[in-house]
Length: 114
Image (cartoon, rainbow, N blue to C red; front, side, top):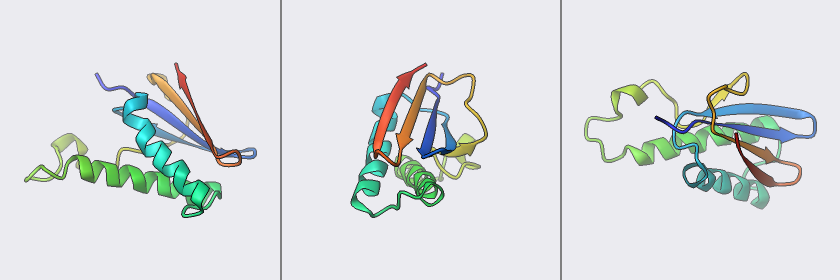
């Protein structure tokens, strides 16, 4: 079974929520989130919640393309409809094992086992 996770990106009182269907455990998710927050810290990605969140989706897309680059026939069937490993969602899912919170004001990431 896949390890599912939600990622909250927040700045002040605003927040956006994302879903990761698989590899949601810290060893699978933190490399991408660390890359994201380092780009925010360096100014490569703005700390504006809506603009930075778009980059989180893009980094998830890049990760998926890199993961499946050795498939000669393209993506496996169950991934062909996905834009990437990180998807926007409207709420915290009931089946997650991990919850990550990215605070753009503090430029930190918190991990919580659910």
